[in-house]
Amino acid sequence: MELISSETPKARKEHRCMACDFLRDDMPNTVSYLNFSEKRDVVKARQNNWKIQKGEVYTKQFLKDGGDVYGFKAITAIHDICIDHDLYPES
Image (cartoon, rainbow, N blue to C red; front, top):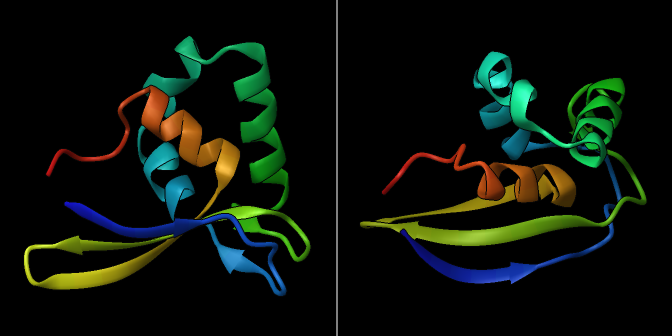
């Protein structure tokens, strides 16, 4: 997987957080080894229905995987949790 671009814009509307999908899939295993601030970020994301809220700064990336190019949007704190705890699939 190749990172084409990455930026942290402010959301002008509500977006689905793609990192939350990976976090929720592994939630029973993950929650036991999160620290307090990470758990607080997860609770905040859950209260917002796993969505990036209008006005929130988020991570926006364009990635290339083989011949496919796609966009990725995520709450920055949740994205960091997924990276730190290896929740993203290997490619």
